[in-house]
Image 1 (cartoon, rainbow, N blue to C red):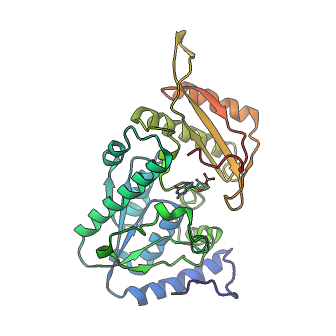
Image 2: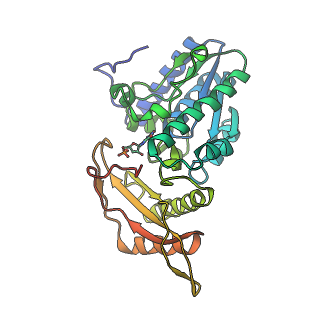
Image 3: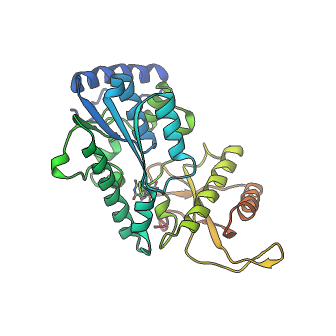
Length: 325
Ligand code: XMP
């Protein structure tokens, strides 16, 4: 397998080039896999979704997709994976709701790197357990993209299933390993994946786990998920989704005093982070119109149980990282 992008490789930026890439890959995948079975950890992110759609096109039911819901997904994400891959594309999809496993391991753990390690480690464990139940798997497909190869310590270390035990090593199928992110999106569209899946903003492997700051509790995680869904909805309505690279809510483990329905109401603050960047190494703050901010504040404080304030993070990177943890 090529690990370096050939110099004459065209940047895939239209449907025709995408179709050509898809045809080539379908052929290559069939040649590599023959009649064997391929396993894929399908997170529902852009990269793994495009790999899944490519493999379904190439080898259909020889692909087994495993979607592990670690309980730290955004609102509606696991449901979308089931709808698109399980129902519309009729994939061989195994859905595992491992929420309780992850949340009980994370109970009381405040340290960000420890949280990441627990989430990454448990993900591999759940995936490994599932893989062992399956018979006749010869290949592991991964949504590695070109920047992952270029950055040897890529941020996706947690996401990719690189850490499987020695006896579970499979031959890899990495059909989009030479593509940049923008090309992956064009290919995804040409494969017929829904726009909201293909144009999605990046989402860290540990998911909402690094946005529910400090020790995660179910009630605060729920509040974060609901507030994040409102932010995304309002960004869509106000045409900001395509202008802002990454936007989300973080909820710290602290409460302040407020008033709701004439009574004292203690709640957590929801922090809005909305940044633009080219490579995630540095980031600038996108100006959000005040009327939109007022609407978001109004909706979150009225609709989300447990939140009584909305704050806006104006810190560029550096000095602040994009995520809070
Ligand atoms: P930071 O917070 O380092 O984030 O400025 C840069 C980009 O990386 C994403 N990110 C992660 N992605 N696993 C991931 O797959 C992680 O542990 C992780 N931490 C940060 C972040 O969302 C941003 O896009």
